[in-house]
Image 1: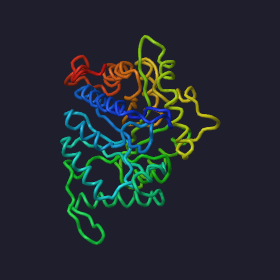
Image 2: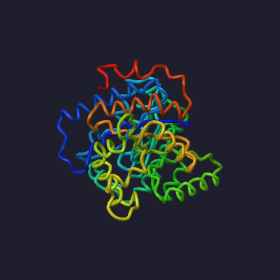
Image 3: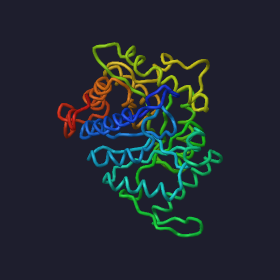
Image 4: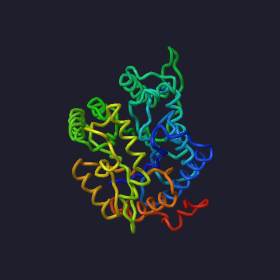
Length: 348
């Protein structure tokens, strides 16, 4: 099983005052430091999210983040979780993806989703109407374009730069609906799920059935927020640093139909759906989810911009030293955290 880390830019709660230039700059420096730290360890990949026009999100440009990481790392897979193709002209997005794949030496993972937030469409001059159909059209265009070397744009055939990987980078399809599950079976190399509420078993069954119809091997990737620490009460610490951010985020997903919950979503209600605790507890929780859902890859979501930096660094160090090696059995890491964590000024 592979273990990745999402270096998340979400620093809530939603609707907070706009971040200063200094806060945004500090996040991006810390983001690169974290990527350097993780490179060459038992962690298999780094993933980034896409969000726009929100004061609680410090980095709205996931492909630019990955391009920077491509130059700062040499072994990590670099992925989006998830990028929303309906927000972009297909040619422009496919060109950017191909370039990031080349800059990284063929390490890109394309995690895609149809999107759910109408504000993202407004910011990008797009529309949420018929986004499922637009997403399907993009995926068809991607397959044809990267196979044939070009796509049709307004009746004109346009050359398309090929990616480094043949025939294309891995494609993960994310979503919380039956159409998303079927889309993942049709177009994706994995189905990416971000929630473990009561709907997820049905979605996984839908996905596996659709894969069977097409003679494809199903593959599941699960992302969950993680807060790992020793010597303190990790749950209390998690609620202190992340409680408001996560509760506000889940309430946002609830309003847009991405999660179903009765009553108010509070941080303490979310703890069972997160990987929180000392390393052995987190490993046990992850293994339980792997067995329960048949997961092939787990992405541990770490909020890099949440203060204090030393708490985030401690969480990442435990993932590197205690959790990732235990879950994926990798002992061949080129460097350990003792040599990696203090490069370029360190994380602390």
